[in-house]
Length: 156
Image (tube, rainbow, N blue to C red; front, side):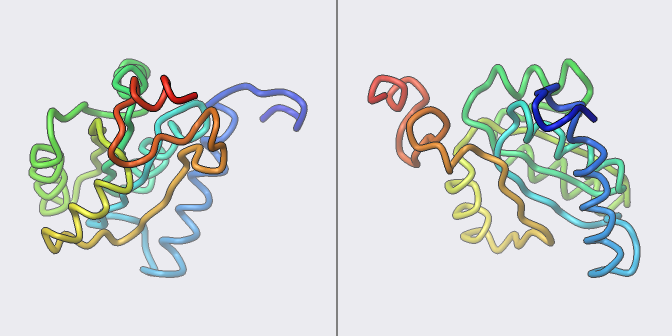
């Protein structure tokens, strides 16, 4: 990876993300992430590595992202396998992959907080939850629940 002064995008974080998830799997499950559901928020420059790191660890990932173009980019670059039209579709495909013991990743266009609330309401409890949205950057990166991307951008 590059030095701390050089931003090289998603490629610069994939190894560290993979190793972090591998260690989580080793400590928590004494194995890899096979049959485990990992949900995450964000598919931007740094967070876009998460779905690939999950599948490299044999797990299943559902990633929430508010910006459709980010999901499309991750599919085009093979960091993400599919772009689901809905959370229903994402869950159906993710659960099929879990049952088959196959790695799989899918993005869904929605707010991460909304996705987690919906998963809990459906009693779909993820095995691992991560968040690499820019929630720490309230001016440029945060998209609050209840706002479209366009609405939040207008408020900036």
